[in-house]
Structures are given as C-alpha cells and as structure tokens.
Image (cartoon, rainbow, N blue to C red; front, side):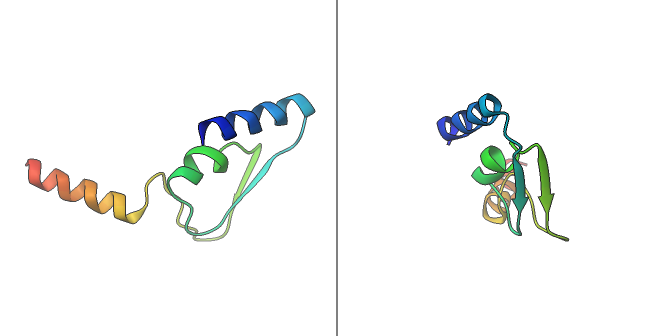
Length: 69
C-alpha cells in the first residue's frame, strides 16, 4: 500500500492533477490510511462510518486493555 500511495501522490503532483476522494460507509483501516486521505478534497456520504481501524480491531484492542487492567 505504501508504494502505491507514494506513486499515486507523486503522479498527482507531477501532472498537477486534482484528486477527489469519495468515502462510503464503512471506510476503515488500510483505505483510510492510504488512498482515502490523499485527496485534495475528501467527500463522505452522510453519517458514514469512517475510521482508522475497523470494529473488529477496536473490539480486540479494548478487550486487550481490559485484560491488562
């Protein structure tokens, strides 16, 4: 993902392109971390679930925190 994101950003800069990201629900994880946030303008549908981590990852993380306490 990093190489594709980097190449996409470089291509966009070199060609002076305007990049619009359209996020639908749900947009989580790798898409948010790479392609989703590279746009010059970022548009999301109303009430869209947009997060860096998905529900499964958040559940596992919160469960892990409870075990540590």
